[in-house]
Length: 240
Image 1 (tube, rainbow, N blue to C red):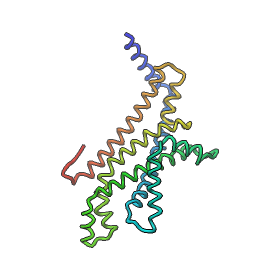
Image 2 (tube, rainbow, N blue to C red; image 1 turned 90 degrees about the vertical axis):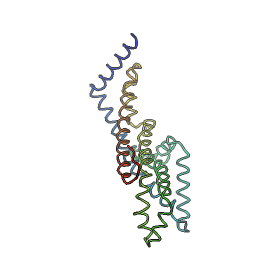
Image 3 (cartoon, helix red, strand yellow; image 1 turned 60 degrees about the vertical axis):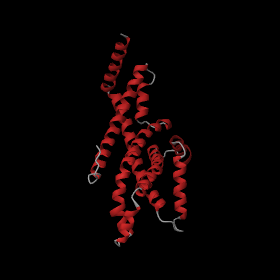
Image 4 (tube, rainbow, N blue to C red; image 1 turned 180 degrees about the horizontal axis):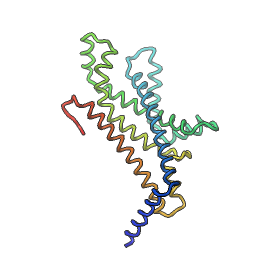
């Protein structure tokens, strides 16, 4: 009997949340901020991560010695420290300037963090291509640029896409910690709606926020799997 009452109260709170304009507006506002931070952080991460990966795998030379050292030190430091700590440093140390847009700080923080992981994904994808492919291109008299873009890159992308998709998903979920620095994201909206109320009232917005995240992650997963399947049409194996 108690379980039925609890379930009934839970469903009533769900209906209340979706029928109260103020609650819906708060959830959508928080969700929009989450998507904005994630989208631009991922773009920054892919751009910077690609540059880092290309520098890291480039043939050694006196001109690249320092850039290579910087890139490797960067990925080591970023991957070896918590994202929350990096976010705090960005907000309260590096960009501790009154009036500086919080969303820009968050995008930079998550973008720089993602770049370290993206660089390893891209580096691993490129190095996974058999060296014989490059040697065959050289034997045919092709230039290094042609070999990379026509032979190596198309094969590397097939290995990069799944791992890159996982990184995108990770960034979206990690943005939930921006509520720790006072930003009104989806996580903060759920806390705000449920604060000061009973347990059922607190759980419902958290449950709805989880559904928002789940739907977003499912969409990303679906898109990545479709891209992966399209890229592997020429392979003897295909995966759904």
